[in-house]
Length: 70
Image (cartoon, rainbow, N blue to C red; front, side, top):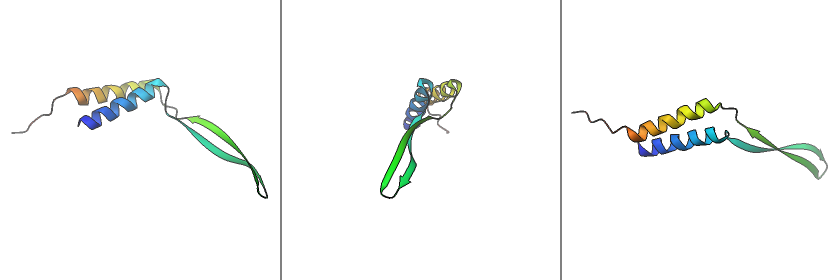
């Protein structure tokens, strides 16, 4: 459960910080053996509210003790 809590907390913090971004390389022109490429930076559009909810869920998983069924 701790791994899940840490994972959710880290994901929530990343979403709050500015979203998740990645680079994508696309080919613009290819003539014979010459290739022209461009790198585009894209960001996944997540609202900061989503990041806050995920962060709160991660903290809750870490803080809530395990319930034992007897």
